[in-house]
Image: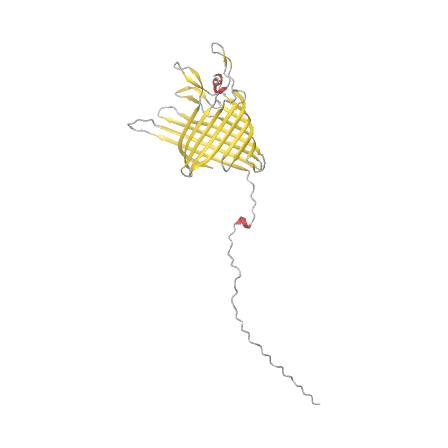
Length: 332
């Protein structure tokens, strides 16, 4: 048996030619590199700062010298040192501010003795709580102390001291409210209960009743029966106001005023301590200053010298001092 295999023929399929055109891949988005600060990539938690400080020092000096100057004149040298130090604490609603102010100045003219032109020591401390969170009003307790360093004389008389350290010395302690707007450099303190203590720790001045203390009791011959008091205590109302403003470029005005009246002794008779200072900035270190300082205290009596050399009381007077200088100021 013959078996024959027949291979069936598979028809040829016609596959159309497909022409594929390739293109370069196109960017769907245009991305730019980002420049990120380190603090944006990694969250850094800084420790809170509770204390802030100010260390400011200033020195002013001037000198005038004459040699064969036909218009005449007196050689002189003068200087003024200023120190202002602050240490302030703030945490949520509580704050505690501390300030030390020192100003010492002197002038020397030809053969005359050195005379002081500025002599001031002041310490301020205040602590309190804000009315509510982020409030500009505070319940506050405040302390202010001020005196001088060196002896004061009524030139040309240098034998009799008219003032010295703690003669007088003033201490204010009180409770009140404070309103402070930091952005506007505005400050106001109102105290309906402030105790004022006046210290005259020079017994001779205390016996004379200087600066408002009770003078000594004397007999008809002028002999002292009872020494004068060295301390006088008052209670009254105190108002403090401070304001700073840049009037023009590099011209800063600083205003400070203190107003006090006693409840018991001559209520309504106001003691005033008012300073207005203008600072003219030349550059980062050199500044010129012009200042005015006015005082009135009914307890401070002016002594007038008579022809025979004796002194009589001349009553209360307005005290005024003005100052102009240029010097170096720097902070540490």
